[in-house]
Amino acid sequence: MDRTLDRRAVAAMVGALVAVPGIALVAAPAGIAQEASPEASPEGSPQASPEASPGASPVAGEQVEIVSYDIYFEPKEVTIPADTDVTIVLPNEGVTLHNFSIDDNKNEDLPFEPIDIDIDPGATEQVAINAPAGEYYFYCNVPGHEAAGMWGTLTVE
Image (cartoon, rainbow, N blue to C red; front, side):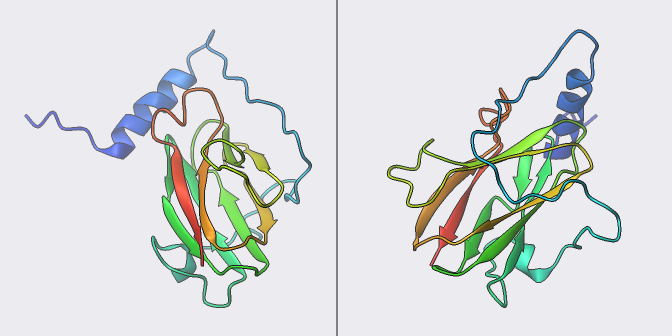
């Protein structure tokens, strides 16, 4: 019998633990208002595209998708063009609340306003970013999620 667990199996177990009555997860309040869609709709949700594949750059430099799962981002490494308006689309395919943050956590002298977006299960949020060249650390600020591996790198070039 194979006892090896893949990432999705571990995520399902963590999601099940989160759903146990008596255990509550509390997200930190957003400090800065962001451009975010109030709710996702099936017809308004973007589909996966070549722009969302790991290491790919958006074709037109306008949109990229980073999906939240329980407990990881996909893709974990994203590249976008520098000094260009790019919309980051953030669907949450997990069973619990997730967050997308780029702030002073592992980003010394952040050259743009911090990003802090909560994403309800099944919802899709989005945020616009225009950043100078550099590497920026993003993560889920829900307690325990970053430590469990829910983080990634946004490369701007």
